[in-house]
Image (cartoon, rainbow, N blue to C red; front, side, top):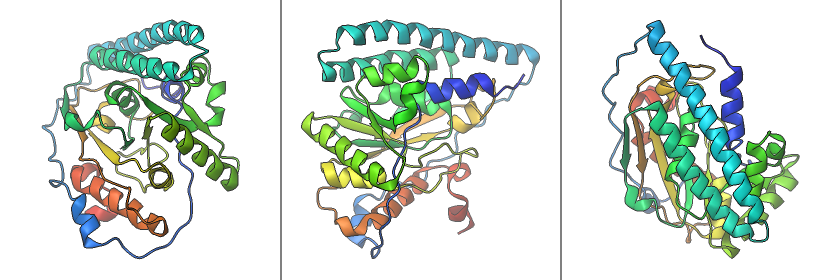
Length: 305
């Protein structure tokens, strides 16, 4: 009972997938002081295993849960679209309503699915910052919708507007879009996004991998989140999600009862960062993620080492 159509539609049309522009830079490695400033408590331990029940009744219940999620999301999306239309003259009130939509919808989705969830470091979830998150499953999207603070905008490719209903709500919520047609347009789009964030005292949420990891292992980071940090001066708050790739696998209509963890790490200050060392900062934050992920989600190269 596996199918790709519904899940691809559900995943791609919720928030469209956050994207990054890739910029070239070269620089010496970061100093030991910078590395120690973001050194975490070490890799996350593997969570207890769960029983993967393949009985047809269990599969049927899972499919019904996904259908319930889809219907619930359609209902909340329609309701908040009406609210957005009434708030058309107030663009940044629409941002806040978009966050409220995410909190309600994300929480409802996770409640319906019923996976055990542990939230760590929630004291860092109210910081005005650039939030970044690893991406392995549609569940990541539900979790960040629920957990990111009011006043947070996403960045998606400009084509999101063509996704039926969800794309229009994304635009109505005044979230940011970038043009990826060429590198010049992408750079300018990122600059415009940074100016909007600073002017309106907003936070950002980004998937720094730029795409979803099919295996659950951390992919290389693109550089857009560092460019945005340099242009806004905002700290970076990593959100480390573990277990989602086991709970909802790619192209599947089966949600398994795997436990999930969302850990907010301490904010990484960026106001003293050197624009000539972009590559180093990308690698530094990537290494921080690797240390906090369980072995099954670390990059393969890190495991080999």
